Length: 418
Image (cartoon, rainbow, N blue to C red; front, side, top):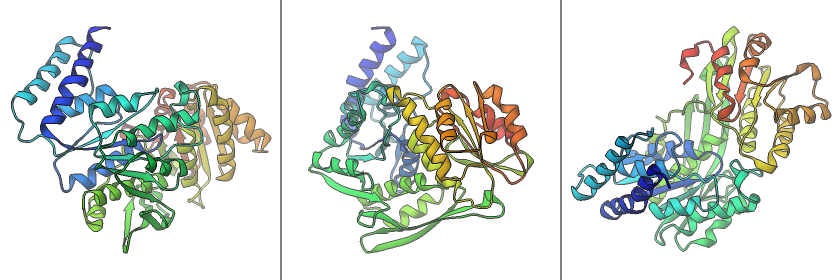
């Protein structure tokens, strides 16, 4: 075991646990295969309106990120021994000298790339409130699990390890996730589009505008006998609607009024590369969704595109990684989503998108509107040539495919892509 791993073990097994024991923050833990980061941001908005909170930055959802969040240090990480020993000393200081400003609530995103990851994170910070977002038919990060059921089993650990007096916030629209309720004696709060969910959406609409950037999402939330309309500009799609329902459900668990929760969500800001709607060259519009990709996330993004009836649609798609033996099946499945949502032009980038192209051709997608490139760098100039005024373009792929190269190439303000 190298020096960095040794320090991490000390931080995670001793210092972080002692900090949690000493300060007793409410721990809100979020897991799932889709929507964790968006949900974390929404929960932080709602809970942060009433409590002093801290949450892990970006997607730092592994053991390093959780430990550093608990200690309140820079989460960007460093290989420097000096930096890591400073982290160690800071942790000890927080234990020895009471920090009057230590957060009342920690909002933590728990990732699981391998079996037992969730157990490990819960052993550091056991949840008071546990949220499970969604898991697709072919989950992302399935590469190191023997099958899809193993992914569900791993995610269920967040409910099994939740405190007995805690609240489990479960996706009612996913039968297997809602089934996790059997693993706890705590309070169950369900959410979803189904009217039988505790927190549900009874009305959902994307209202497009001639100037697409001004498009809005309208939602009517309901909880018990209370309901409230909500609208937000530029934050579009059912993925965000689910994130908002999770945040409202946390509000219910913490006795935050529904209207107060919605008021806090009015200030919700999109994370970079998560369905950011921006102006493109030639008076086009771009959904910059290039941060990462999984089959369910691709489906959700394409369905959002289909809400815009008056625009020709282009899909620039990079390989989805970490799917292991399910990779071919997943990339072929995307072809059906493309057909179902009226995509006109398809550009595949990466070896795995060849499966998507083969399936598109079998589904009689116009071969003249299919393009293939090995890398984003090779594709960027051709993509620019394909665009016409008024086009709506979705750019999506796994982070390692560097799809942001395409986004910068065709954005009206390239410097806005971060």
